[in-house]
Length: 295
Ligand SMILES: NC(=O)C1=CN([C@@H]2O[C@H](COP(=O)(O)OP(=O)(O)OC[C@H]3O[C@@H](n4cnc5c(N)ncnc54)[C@H](O)[C@@H]3O)[C@@H](O)[C@H]2O)C=CC1
Ligand SMILES: O=C(O)C(=O)Cc1ccc(O)cc1
Image 1 (cartoon, protein in one colour):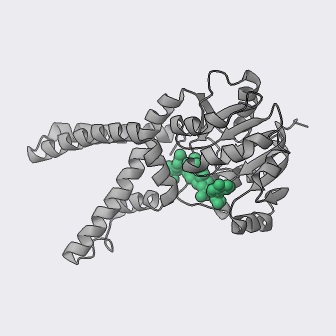
Image 2 (cartoon, protein in one colour):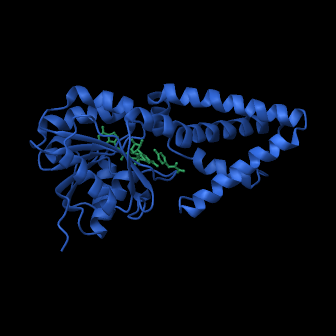
Image 3 (cartoon, rainbow, N blue to C red):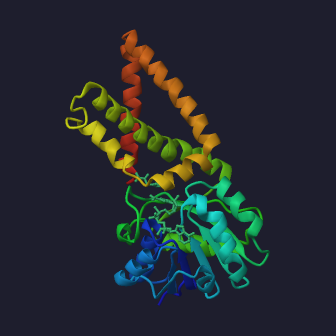
């Protein structure tokens, strides 16, 4: 039988990501022998209990942390600092603190002041999710064939990195290590900017419907419908991501705005070659994602 990576895993914030981890541990051997789910919201705790996806459920983060050899924070990125502050003093010497925040530099900065020398901190980011939130939204196969990015610090102990890599590998993820700053620039373009565009285009279409009293939204064709899926994402989570990755996101938005202006100019002057070239690049990217089973 495969030995479990962790004896006791505490998941703080069993929402979409946290409950998917808990379900994975339940359904697949070799991840953790015992799980504790912790949430600030008693209604979430009650639901996790009903779902039967954790061995123990509590609102007391310190009590759970004291029993765990890995504490995985799955709370909104803006809450990571104070949640880390509440679990770290209670953690067992030699235990691992990990978190799945979508932004790395600011979250690491928020957690660092509370770190202890005998706790290994391993920041990760599973590049997997949906527009839904909460414990009912999770599923055990969420991380399969999806990237999980690790952004260890210079002094993160090797064994803690290895254990974390094995854990996510057994969740079905593809793994890549990178610096936190590089992570934030990559995610700004592939994840954060697309969400910003989706929220914005939905707002613009809604304003147009108000202005013209037309049924812009009723007749929205499939292109717009694809944007509305992303635009249905959780407002608090995305507020935190935008503000915590402000610098890289604004830089990518400026780049995008320039490229959109170039497309506008090509359309104005009927520059067919430019327009076709840009569309062909999009098709190529989509095709390579499908080939890599990422779409
Ligand atoms: N939703 C997604 O597709 C992805 C999200 N992430 C990151 O994962 C984290 C969690 O996201 P989701 O699972 O979507 O959120 P969610 O909203 O589904 O779950 C978050 C849970 O944290 C709980 N919580 C909030 N503050 C807390 C506190 N102080 N103590 C204990 N529990 C607390 C909430 O009650 C909720 O149950 C975020 O940092 C997000 O950036 C990473 C990859 C994908
Ligand atoms: O639903 C989608 O399309 C997503 O992009 C999910 C997602 C949201 C946040 C992340 O940090 C990673 C993945």
